[in-house]
Every structure is written in structure tokens, then in C-alpha cells.
Length: 62
Ligand SMILES: [Zn+2]
Image (tube, rainbow, N blue to C red; front, side):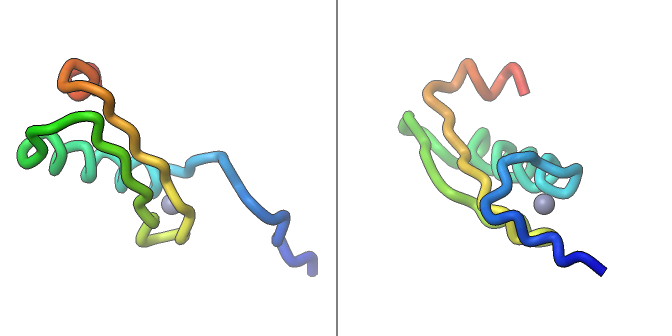
């Protein structure tokens, strides 16, 4: 029964990718000035996601 507390995790899970996609969708609709840099906490696993969008072109690629 090991406790999986390895400290800071950088790997994103599916829940994180969904959270990131949702944030990016919001940015796409609402943000007019770039860069947009914000830390977002994943609602499912509580990992802090660093969301960085430097220009609008990046949003088109997501
Ligand atoms: Zn997550």
C-alpha cells in the first residue's frame, strides 16, 4: 500500500487535457490581449496546469 506522493508532477492526465481544452476554448472566445498566462487547477486531479498562449495563432492549432 504505497502512497503515491512523489511531489510535483508534470505529466498531464486525460482530465488535465480536458481542463486545458476548456480553458483554451474560453480564451479563444473571451481573451483579446496576449500573451495569456495563467495557472489553472485541474478540477479532477488538482494538478496545476500552466496555460500559456502567446498569440491567437496558437489557439487555432489546438
Ligand atoms: Zn487532471
